[in-house]
Amino acid sequence: MTKKNYKEHAQHTSLLAPYKYYPSGVPVLSPFFSPHWHSEFEINFILSGSAAFTCDGESFTAHEGDIFIFLPGQIHSIDPIENEKSFYDTLLFKAETLGPAEERGYLQIMNPLLDGLFKVKSPISREDPNYEALRNAIEAVFVSAKANTAPMDFLLKSDLLRFFYLLYANNYIYSQQIPLPRYSDIIRPALLYIKEHYAEEISVDVLASLIPLSKSYFMSCFKKATGVSAIAYTTLVRIQQVSQMLLKTDKSVTQIASECGFHNLANFNRQFKKNTGYTPVDYRNKFTQSH
Image (cartoon, rainbow, N blue to C red; front, side, top):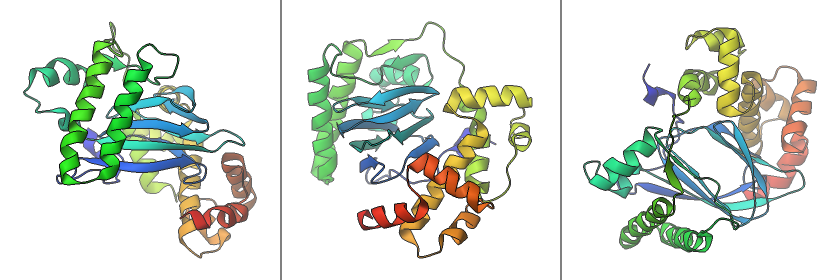
């Protein structure tokens, strides 16, 4: 199987619009975003509140004004913090938005970034040098993205190029002397399998055999890539599916739980409350009007 078979299935961009803007928030707009990856760059600009962001197994607390940048292929997740609501702007865009692959800027900066030879500092916060210039640049990016018109596409590309120029010129994009192991690349067959089979029984033995790795090494790679165990990740995927069905269907809680792979109702209720902070019924009642 090739790398392209393991990515998130959602269609974020197209030939007509090589980017996609999303108003985002946890837990109001989504209870959380379980670990996932896609082939586009992702930029998040925190508008209010706090949330827990994880990238390649490393966790950060996001605060108002923070800028998060996820590279194509990086596994990342977003979770709410107890009693906190966080809202943020999200932009996904294809690497080629920044220019043809034959140009020297792409060859000398973007290619090493995509290949893991360069790294980008993330998050960027108020305490960072050059923060104001970067914040102004990313705010301009989102103004253009939200307009979502053909003329503004030109401006968006210009704004993105300026933002990446500032990142590189101020050493927010820098060389890694020793590239880190790409644990995210290693475990992607397992992520795809869980996404497609979450309603079924899933064991660590089966997941490890897909790659193939020893069970112990697979568990180590999975935890380093996602920040959680394979079983915990499977539970998160199931709960995310449940939360969407609670808001978009009239099916009973018991039926939804069963269709999403939970066959013990008591365990389901416990896991849902643990990961969302609400009972399934309370979650449906509270957030249905937001969708």
